[in-house]
Length: 407
Image 1: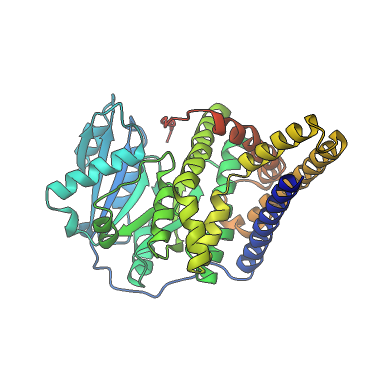
Image 2: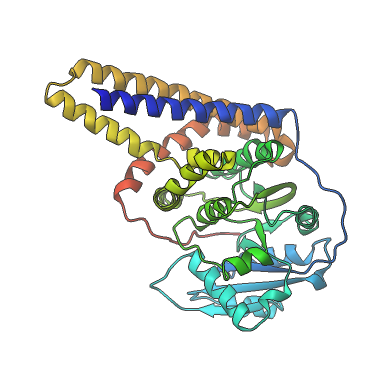
């Protein structure tokens, strides 16, 4: 009885705090748009790091958008790791005048290993320290022409790690791509933007971020190899006391999966990665939150908290206790009904959140009003699919698999 009550209280408090924090972030961002940074000299030298696996059809678009930047091209070098490629990605990128490192390793698979290999090659050649900072992009990305100029402003304002505004090239393709795109736009506008306003650390996404030479040297290149290497990098940085910044005026366009099967596999890997990160970094984050009174540690503890695992533990204990007669089946059924009602209300809240995102960022979203209405209505379905995905992640052995991009 006591154990069940404790679990109920813990889950209620965590859920209430998380929802309350989200509400505060939304309100703060509605009344204050992106923080802008003052103009600075465009004199820093940057390396662009790209991990690509069979991306010959899309990576030229990214390279062209990098070459078209308002930032001086002579100060931006492009480095690509052709990771286990079986197509002509390496040759295509070399022909465009970029630096290419080829990697062949089918045992250590994933973007984290590819970035490690690329930076190790740059370090061994003695050129990694020639750069002031490093950008990380996915091969399917495209950049607004002011992207590097805007990130340079934020970098020279004092941030050692920065993330940017993540938009989509294909939000209007279908309900799957729109669900993913709206989620990332929401994260940029309502979470990272608010974290900047509050003076706390932001969350690095899987693409569209940068880190300084000092961070590269501290990590001896790139040392993050969990399924969600970006989240791992974020947690490690927060534990080192870094404040990760957000530059909302630097806009990146990312291609989202249009197949529900591909989206499921991608989000299964993310969900499994969140569990991995909580296992390795959760206790340290909690300790830092208590000892250092670090709000960023509190924020990210809630972000990676395994709610599905807690819910399954609560249900299993409830069934076990009821079977032995310690509690009644009626009380456990009432608890499940209460959770179901809460879940329905949560999905309605997701619909409202999608509508609010569309309202706040209408100028950034390339879709008709009719399409946006349909995508707002379908957003709860997309989010509801996270329930079985999170359940499967607990028991499955998710692996990194490439997503097909059409460009």
